[in-house]
Image 1 (cartoon, one colour):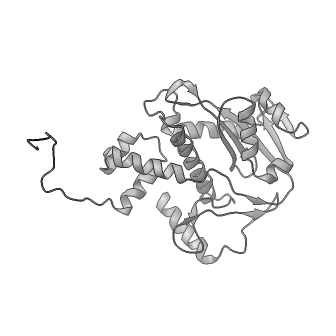
Image 2 (cartoon, one colour):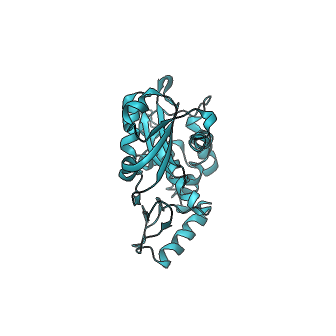
Image 3 (cartoon, helix red, strand yellow):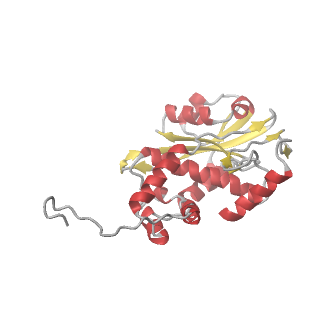
Length: 262
């Protein structure tokens, strides 16, 4: 301790470098229902450094679903789920849309449960879905105002027409710790709240592909070499096929990447 300013210093400090394997472990743990304090204990990274990494990761994560798909028969299911930031009076509703056939999340918006929220969900949908998809929702009035009346179908839960998106709501709430209803791991910043949701949705779409479903690779090794890239898909409504740009080498690298995640 300095006798003049009373500041404390570490004698003979060492610079500890966090390995790439440890950061990969952090990425995995962020996809589970584990608070930051728990991740810090598991990895040995201080909460300060961990929070800095999370802030940067969630700031840079893409907040858009990229899909290349021909027009035709498309059906989506939409729903909204409650969450909060800071305190329960600051409600943030998560608006979601899922492709009924592929089970891919194709629309995401976080905001108020109002006409603005419904508009945000509609705007988040890829153009092909806005142009020709039949949309099943609950009876919340905001949907009727924003969604095209000819393709909007308001239904009750007993119909089963929104069962896929309701099931995904449960998955999202159980896998993202800050969305659990009674938790101490709630978000303090809206940016990280939104980033955590997008982080899991990209991972969900990717792992659904790994389980044998023909979706695009939204978060996979870039075929151009080095680092991570955002893939795309090209298909009509009933049959999916990868674009000619995806080579055997790309598929092999993607498989190796998935093995690291799973």
